[in-house]
Amino acid sequence: QVQLVESGGGLVQPGESLRLSCAASGNIFSISAMGWYRQVPGKQRELVATMPTGGRINYADAVKGRFTISRDNVKNTVYLQMNSLKPEDTAVYYCNQRGLEGPPYKLFEVWGQGTLVTVSS
Image (cartoon, helix red, strand yellow):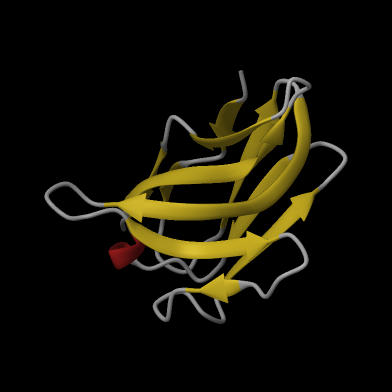
């Protein structure tokens, strides 16, 4: 069973930076996409950035130019570098990975446990 472990959240002041990490473990054969989402209480979870394998990276308009998604395929880890953080970036951030595990082969999609990012002065 594939599992994700997130790290890197915390409390920062506006304008500061944070780096989130999300490592996958298990019998992973290949990963087709990695991504980050965020959720504020009372609102739907929203896309922050996605990185399909061999595809184009997609960012939410609200984070373009400030956030950067990257991945380490050897470690099955996805990162989110967040710069110039704003109070409106405050949310619980979730990573997501999809791919193929096995053998025996089957598709998987898993979510991380969530990590809280608070941007406040």
